Length: 94
Ligand SMILES: [Zn+2]
Image (cartoon, rainbow, N blue to C red; front, side):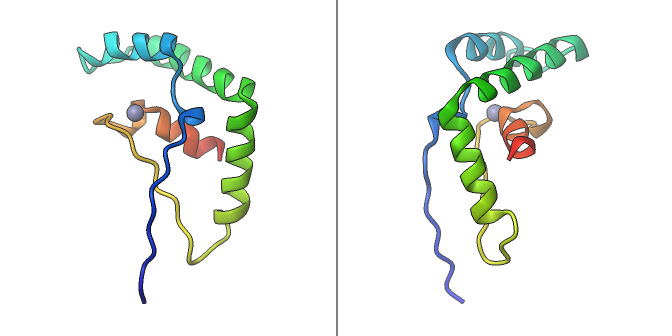
């Protein structure tokens, strides 16, 4: 079976500048306190809920891929730990 792969960049699922600045400061130490991470996660989820294009994309991905045996989505990011990365949050929201 030939696998067909393609890559798409979806900036609507990415951090905004404020969250990215906060992330950069924290990632230098590679340690989040629970309070820091919870605040970050809440802010990111709120951002995604406010972005109409993010909502549309997540609904579309869920519809097309959620129940498919042949189609899969892989979310990529440079973060070393998925637990503290927006891709995990995106995955949970999809
Ligand atoms: Zn990440």
